[in-house]
Length: 71
Image 1 (cartoon, helix red, strand yellow):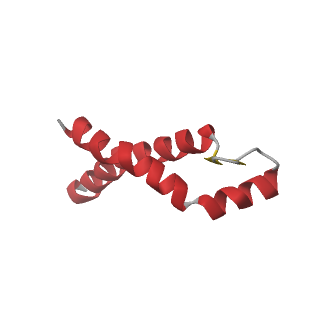
Image 2 (cartoon, rainbow, N blue to C red; image 1 turned 60 degrees about the vertical axis):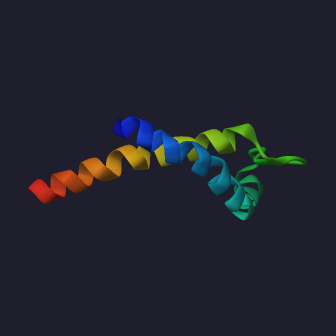
């Protein structure tokens, strides 16, 4: 059940956060030369990177919090 709740907020938050990070993606492209922005917005890998980061945070933060509370 927790997995579904996590996906319920990670899936819509990913594209929103990716678009909010538009200036950062521009900097990444300028600094690294990686194609981050196209004429229609951030590249596909940008969306995947943000989704993976959000999913990792969503899975790790509760576990770390429980570990500290038990500790």
